[in-house]
Length: 306
Image (cartoon, rainbow, N blue to C red; front, top):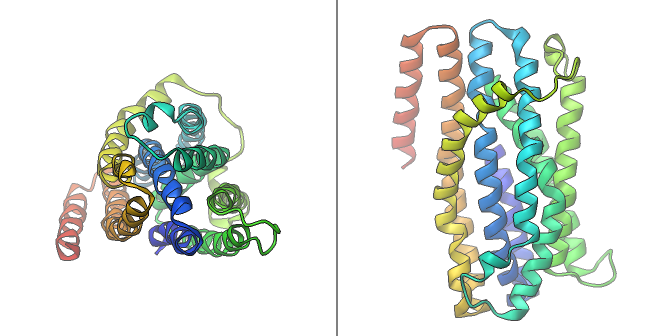
């Protein structure tokens, strides 16, 4: 449900802009395709914290979990730099296709707004992987639902001009997405500070400096996952760049179909995340039989979903 809630914001944007205008929807389709590809690639790298923490948790090494999470936050900060630069300077990507100038200008402004919300999104995705590793999906569910509701209200008011006075169209969606990114990070921080179940881990106490070995290990695990995420999701999202030369209406239609594909993608992704956590717990405890059982169960459920 938490994974589907994250896609809910894309659906809200599509529904609102579908009534606003094809040019704005096309701009969000092109810009959103780049943004989603960047986020999924970088979040895939940060997903490395999940097997790391799950392995420590399963092996009874709770004292090392705080350090692993803090190093993952440092990695999120480092990855935010190239991510923001890609969003602020998308000209090389736009050059891949003959995009309508009006759509390109609007998509560029839309990406600039999303760049403001990328750092908190990456920090939140680190928190997301951490909670999954400990088998605590409830806070993710609550934050995701609250974020989706907030985005729905905020985007509606900005796109239509109900609060801002002037309808902002695609730019309203960009402002809302950036604001919701910071809201999600605020919720994650509150949970890390206040959740009683997490206090024994002292997650934000005795903050560590970046450690080359720890960061290298996270990259060793995360880079293959990030590349895999990028290939899987970009086959849908970046396609908008190449379709853009066919016109705003065609790109807008592609955006609608891409939303349906994203919904189908999120279900097995959620299953994979749950399987990863279970296998990590079993491997940390050296219970290879349970690890194999978790793998088999995940594959079976994936087959049922397909």
